[in-house]
Image 1 (cartoon, helix red, strand yellow):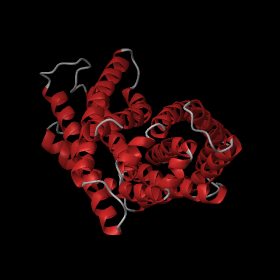
Image 2 (image 1 turned 60 degrees about the horizontal axis):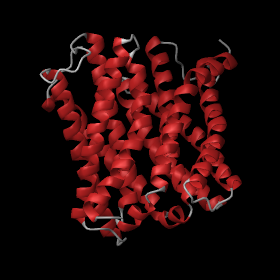
Image 3 (image 1 turned 180 degrees about the horizontal axis):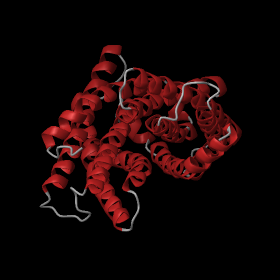
Length: 190
Length: 185
């Protein structure tokens, strides 16, 4: 195939998913643009934002990929059964690792900002905000990933191609919206 | 291959990498924090942050997964004259160059609707377009380097390249946005 042919094929294949994630990213941006009050109220919160958003992508992207592989291998049934040992372990591991990484990010950000002498909110505040946001967006993303991957699989879609765009488009929006809520819970009405 | 589905096994497989990536991402957060005052003054730039980070990572991971598939099929060669390689690189750069101006316009529009557009639409589109072009070149360089390294060290590119590329591109997204804002705002 010529370079042009390969490039046109690759462009056409990638453009729809990328455009969808751009729309999701812009909505997430609108949430971030609207949370200036929260960013001012909790110093150091902006430093945490990339780590918290990446954690959602890394944890729930991996959970979705694992679920997709499990469906392909036939070790996971495409229906929600709370007694399913594998599904329960997958959900528990994703939630647990997501929370650990969120709390860890808050501690690292606090320590680095304090060492650099930059203004930073209290350690307890940052950790509480990160954990509450991590818990709420974890619940929302677990429900979204399980529901969409199972429903998609039952309708004959390849779960592997659903997971990536789903997590990238919804992860940032959920992540930031729940970050606003977490600041409201921890700091009060800002 | 049937993977183990226990909390302990999943945690062992993912937590070390996850924590390492978290430290890298806090690094990009520090860059973001260093121009926080500018971002808070111009909300349309704040709107650009998640979409720039996310799209940079996506461009890298799309290229990485296509190169990885070519690698597994045995059709990939690291020769600049290789049609598969050159075509995918051209597609990545074209995707960035065509999408980012739209991203800039969208960010300005969202900031205007939510009541915070102080910068002119031209400035926001220029910041997005310049960031996008620079990011495309960087994403290609990082992806090629990571895929080549995986190939040399005989690692499966699926396991290694995509997480590395996605998170490195996240960091580069913030750095490039910082540079474009310094240059144009």
